[in-house]
Image (cartoon, rainbow, N blue to C red; front, side, top):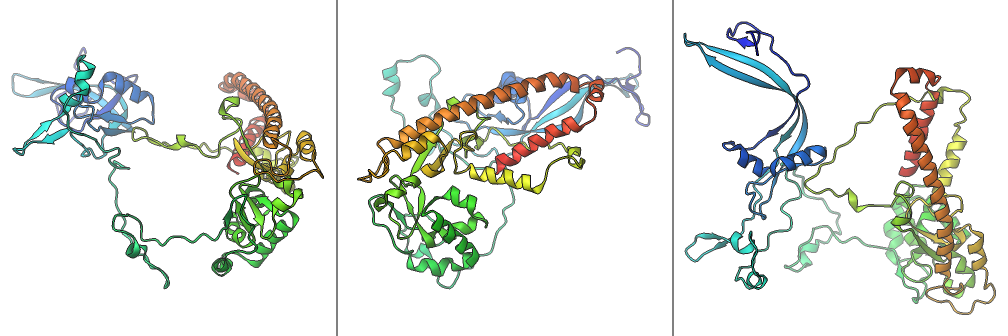
Length: 493
């Protein structure tokens, strides 16, 4: 620096200092007194580990107090956004005993890693000796140089098994104590009858009123005696009559089919079903609810209600086309955190247009069609999930219907695998359904590829103001936003 512009010597005066606006820095608030920078970097895994962590916004920065100990549990630093300045200050003492300071702003610190989590969860590989002192087992458990395999396996090393998990959370939080739970009069405390070697809650075991049967079991004629008394107040008479009418139309239903036809809340249905039907665990009607007193093994006409378990391999399609019901990838390790993306507000002006055909009837038709796809297979519609349970009467394919009625009037024995249908009915149906499914997936992937190509071509135009003015208003853009929103709503349904 030349000149005295950035020299500060009078505390009562302000000065202008140089500012490097292009400088960007990352701050690590090390939870300790740093006397050796190299050793401090080793505890953080080195520059490479810090760079990899910084490149992923949801990743936490690990700090290992004993880098050479593979059993050391790291503490994690959380990434936070900051608006700090990094300043370089040089102090020079004058002959008269006063100090002059040369100040420079090197850059901006916009990312910081702060270690606010607890770091006292450690399990050391130690062994207590006879004299009361502890001996480290690290040299016996690990090796740095090449050694003989037999020698390593024959080492006399005490058993050392560290815990699988230390704690679910490493961030301290306030615990809100609650009052003791108030139980009803007939409550029986299970802890009084439970064995001492068992650990359990004080909640009484829930009573299940659903009757589960296998294929060879006799068909029940009525529900459990206490079911009506315990479940009567859980629903209205109109809701029960609605389900009764559904079982009159069809004696066997899938849960998805009943939910599609039931007008009440889905939680009410789980209280009504045990009073009107039983549940098949095995056989050609497995996973289905059957009306009390109706035996499908004695009625060949019941073959149209048999179950088809249709599954699709992940390799056959993109996850963007058909989504799974649930996923294990939602589980996060302690090294990662969830970050909610900010939602950008968008105004859809297409709804202000009088010519826009967006009536309640159209919305209702879309909703009804979406509900039907949860239990009906159509040749022109993709199933909502990768695994679906269909009934043969709900598979709207001509080939399947021909197979279903191929042996009409010739049914003799109800088989546990194929029921009243022809041999290998399930495999033949799945083959036919997979053929239509693959065609739809190919069309959907081609459609997505074309849309992606259009968006990639349109993106450079949208970045310039001139191109925005050439689009002739915002109607086209808003229409695209509206379609995206509708797709999200359908996925959530």
